[in-house]
Image 1 (cartoon, rainbow, N blue to C red):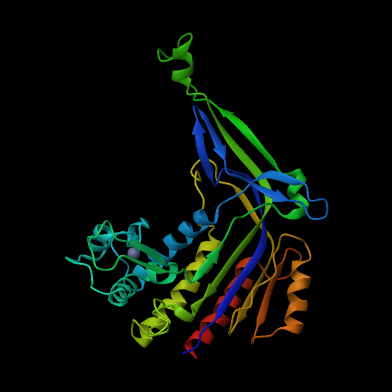
Image 2 (image 1 turned 135 degrees about the vertical axis):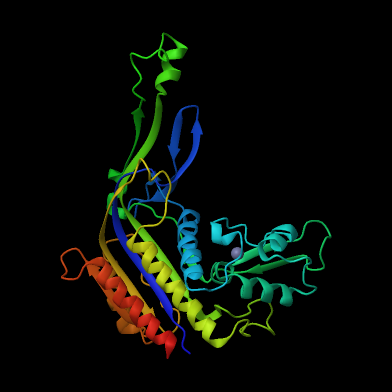
Amino acid sequence: MGDVFFSFRGRVYINAEALNMVESIGNYVKHRRVPVIVPGTYVTYMVPAISGESIAHGYQYVLAQKAVEKGLPVCKLCRHGIFLKSTNESVFMDSFDKKEIPKTPEELEKEIVAGCVVEDVGGFLYASEKGKSKVKNLKRTSNFYVGYMIPAAEALINTVVEPQLHTRYALGTKYVGRGEREARGQMIYYVEIASASYVFSYDLDTRYIGRSTYSIDMAGKPLVGKDEMIERKIVALEAFAEFLTEMMFGAKKTRFLPVIDWESFVVAVSDKPWTVPSPFTKKYIERATKKLEKINKNTKLYIYKEEGEQGPEEVLLHAVEDATERIKQ
Ligand SMILES: [Zn+2]
């Protein structure tokens, strides 16, 4: 049974999006913003962004659904997209239908990992509520890595966040009068929307999927059977393919469904950690091929460009197939 390191970096045009909102002040809903520095001039801009937490939620939701479809174990909360992930005694016991907490951290990790693919792949953080269990706290680091989507370097100074005014049409009804009644009846509100060429990053390291990570002595010890371990690694990859081709992340998509097109991306499939260089600057594809000339961990690159012959889905699926074959070997 093999392991892979799967690394994806890309640039994607997202127009008129409200994918990650942070707060509403009265009837004004704000888009998330982060400070980003412009290379060369070092000027810092506050630009629209989509958080890694938002992306991780979307990915784990697809992962939960796909794992359930394949008959793999997913706990009661994760299968509904509620990722409290064994955060304390009551969440653990409700999620896994247990009456008590295992006595040692090793046993607790085994029960959680064996019982839930999402917590196996995406990690968890258990912290006991005051003195209720022998295990005080237990952490499992996520096997996949995501971060903020920010505008690409060249797009930074041209990125716009614009509040859009919306009203419900209710004129001519008794619900709309003068003064306050006018505003209430028509529900005037503002939603900030943004447009940019965003960068996107995702890495998956399958080494510890289905295995213990808790202590030095135990690290790497299998917690599930061999066949199931293979299935878990493959479902983590297939979930990513579906997540990306269907863009299964972000909020407010029922009325602010953004216009999305991939500009370019690079996928690296390797036996050991090998990450694609950051797509923040345009040269990242060239830098990836140069890096491969110097560092090669049985690495194969899959590159999508707008002007290329293959569509983004085709390129991505080839990469996923390669990774899947390596896992099965
Ligand atoms: Zn779970």
